[in-house]
Image (cartoon, rainbow, N blue to C red):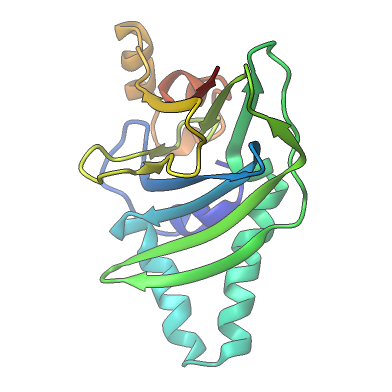
Length: 209
């Protein structure tokens, strides 16, 4: 993964030798206004190993709000530069663009882990009527695994969808050969293959009548 938190992931020794080497637990709320899809509200929780470098920087900031804001801004700017690591398509296969300005960014310590929260909005609100949308969020190289945990109820919150719509989270179906290939990549091969991430990515589906 190019930048992102993952300056944090790259800064710590990780035991595992196979891809992925770091893990992000995601939560996502679908944002709807006037029967139009307007964006997504994300929460990304880093694993403990990846969090350790960030926690060190937070400790070094010694509660200075300016220093802490700078830490948050650095990560958020990297997320924006990578298009939120998120790819949204409609049923015609058209790629939907996002606004470049991130909304409501925050960083929070949760035990021994660090969570980043933010909203990102579509460049143009998209009508939901008769439409189908697919959203995938992933590190293209699969160096970092980003997923919606099954143990978290409503990891994807569809509550704002109107009655004519429903949402699902679809699991990927990865060929055994691809799984073996990913397992063969060690930590030094973080940019080896930009086609891996999408194969392992869950798909958020929004379908409307």
